[in-house]
Structures are given as C-alpha cells and as structure tokens.
Image (cartoon, rainbow, N blue to C red):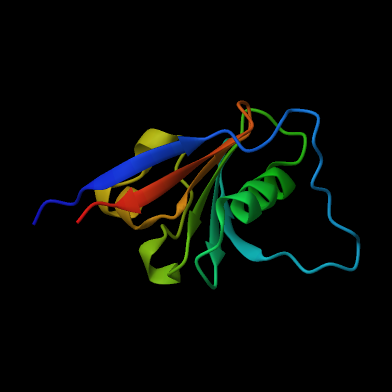
Length: 114
C-alpha cells in the first residue's frame, strides 16, 4: 500500500511574534530527540496549527536553522532525530502532524489523503 500525504503550508507567525512561555507553564509536547538541526516531538493529541507553531518556536528558541517534527503517536516517531529532513522515512512523514520550519517561521501541516 502506497502512503500518500497532502502537505498544507501555512505561514502562521510574523518573525517578530513571540510565543515565549511563562516559567511555570508545562510544555504541551515532549521533545523526544534532537540532532543539530532537527527535533522530534510527541504530543498527546492532535493540535491546531497555531499551537504546534508555538511549540516549534519554543523548542527551537533562537537557534537557526531549526526544524521540529511533530507526532501524535509516539511509536510513529523516530527514536533518534535525523541529521536533516531527508532522513525521515515516508512512513514517518505521512504519520506526522507536520513540521515547524524555524528559519521561515512557518508550520507545515501534513494531512493524510484518502
């Protein structure tokens, strides 16, 4: 069976917008692994684009380039973050919720195609 996904790209943040969390707030998504440029995060539920964008910005902080891939199901996410985006398998890409691209300040939603 061939896996197919539709990629929806939405610019969600102006570069000057900050989503810094208060010190007592708990992160919504857990960072599972990180390489120099790529982070793998798992969230317990399917979240709106704006929330994932804010989580991506939180995880990347000021570090650029930076990409944060999000999964809802931990077993779908890679155990080790790849060195670059090309290191993800088709199955990992298709099962992800999407990716925050820090250097462009955008979240790209991955939607399954029926």
